[in-house]
Image (cartoon, rainbow, N blue to C red; front, side, top):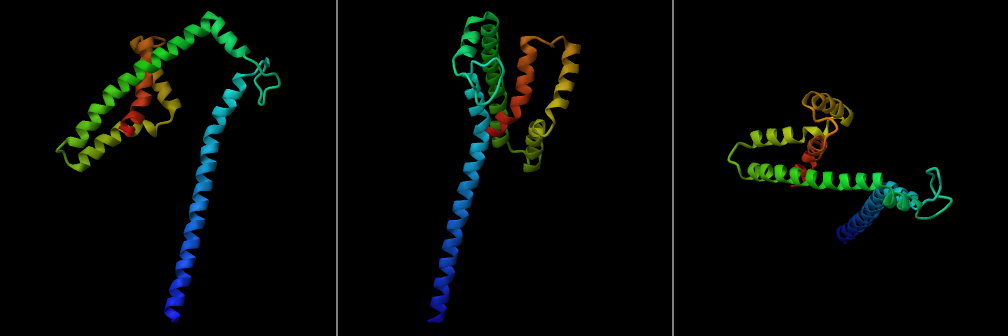
Length: 168
């Protein structure tokens, strides 16, 4: 009888411990999600400000920033350029990453070689972006790509390729 009583107590302790771990992990995930969403929420809230200075929370609410965005031609051109760059960059990154990922999954090469190739493709994730930018600047000055549409696309692809490869 003592064995069943001890077994019952240990099961209850394990259930309690499991419940506590679940509750703590849900709390941690909720806090992490809130911390990740907070900057986006602040930016959206500030975008509805009519104040001359950026401050959170805004004192005067309105659509002044959106009126300036859509009424000034320079902002419209900038938004159009951003959309074009993002579409071309995403297309090129996907067109490069998907075939490489599929080839590495279906290859007959040894696992060590495949891991080395994958690591080389993901090395850009560990490089500091500032160092990456300085190197790209030097190369783009020499090749005449500095300030051009295709130079920005190449820079975007070089930054987004590792993430695209990782997701695929």
